[in-house]
Image (cartoon, rainbow, N blue to C red; front, side):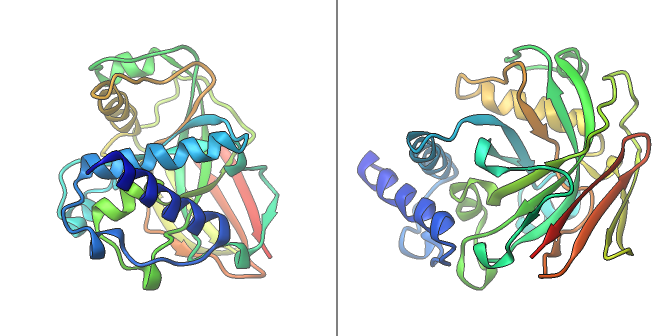
Length: 258
């Protein structure tokens, strides 16, 4: 795909996110759009955000559960960028009308203590982590009727929208391989799961991200946040909701939907 088309489609997905206006799948008009093209579109849309004053604060992983991979017919997870405008304080709120199809997933977040790049193992990835916390990610596909292909999702920055971090930061020596996770809405349990559902171990997800970034000569930097992936299926965000997550050894995190 030529750079002019990449920039045009980046503007389409960026405008959709800014204006909360659903768009037709990009692949409906560009059936030759590859995964490589999709990541180029994603990065071009991020450059538009940075041009407006947003800053890169981290990365998120998507399609980290075996069930989601099978559903989408893929064998590897995908990633997206997190910017300063996406961070929501625990206990904060957002307006549902400001988004298209907002949904929430329970996550484990890593805070990076130093720069890291290369083809790394899980233990090497862990050596660069300074802290771990509970997190909630609000995803929002900008496509009409919530219909899209894998490449559409990647171009749309892996549906990245908002994220909320828990206030308790655990040291990286915490075993995150099988932490119980309970997500509730208005005090009613809606999803239960384990961190083991995140690519079978959240550290595998972190290492996979670093390896994928290395393939395009990028890496992670000290202070950045990494959302390792959803531990359960996502649930729709509806006005008047109080969403909370309890994670074993990591405490709670919450937000409200107006």
